[in-house]
Amino acid sequence: QTRENHALPAFRRCLKLAIRDLDLKTLLDIPLWEKVQDELAKLTGTAIITIDFKGNPITKHSCRTDFCSVIRENPISRKRCFRCDALAGLEAVRLGRPYIYLCHCGIVDVAVPVLVGDRYLGAVMFGQVRIPNNDTEAKVERLVSEISSFQAESVTARQDLLEKYQRLPEMEYKRIVAVADTINAMVNYIVDRAVNTENEAMTYKFLLQNSNMHGSSVNSEIQELRNPALETDINEPEPEIPKSSPVYPAVAYVKSHRHEMVSMNNMAKLCHLSPSYFSRLFRRELGENFINYVNRQKIQWAKEKLRSGNDSVVQIAQELGYMDSSYFISVFKRFEGITPLVYRQHKYR
Image (cartoon, rainbow, N blue to C red):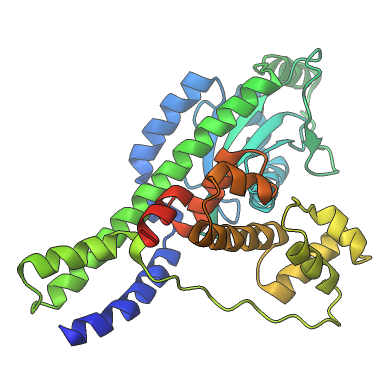
């Protein structure tokens, strides 16, 4: 029994490493997901495709529009479509939420990131719609500066392409946001279920290999291993960053302004760097992107407050700069695998 108790911490570390090795094809039963994707596309009135972290499609296109079919059949335009998909997925990861944008053809697409912890696996892309001209709430930026140079060969073909563009479905910005939130919730649920399934499979395998554990002791160990709220926190040490580092002012600012939702652009200005160079340098110095770093710090601070105080989850979220407590809860669960309330109730019961 003593030997098994010593084995548990090592097993938990192996389990976390195994979860980090999950890929998109492991998370999703592709044939089944394509059926769900087809129905979701019909229900929302959008085109949907799932891509890996490089921007390569791993599913077929559900309800692709005639206009985009022509664009994606052209070798040059298809490369730009793939590039837009890849860049949009990365931007969604940076923002920590679905990213709504205009593609190189000027139509609206959305990237919903698929994350396991802080690891980006790919994205569910939907859209191929236009926003009505009278929609004053639309806030959509163009992802790339270049505009598609695709030209049909004949006047008839150009006229046909224009007609296909005009037949693109129109959708109000509010509706696009609502669809993005729905698909994002579905993706998070699927990821959580897949991670839990992998957790359970490895747990039972571990227990079977250690056959000297019998009866109630096996059940108790199963419960301990399956419940992440009862695990010992395994926090990787934060990389030490010297004061001479160009991004040190940003790190110091984040640590001394827990109540703020700090933007990357403002921190780039503070460090006298361009946003793009600041982003690359920050990742190189700290090992993760800026938004992820800020959220990780805030979640560590939230755990301290959950352990030591009686403030409500809403109060803690507001104190850390999260105006939307539901978003705070989703971020907490992404990092810790459980909600703040479960963390407080079970880990420090």
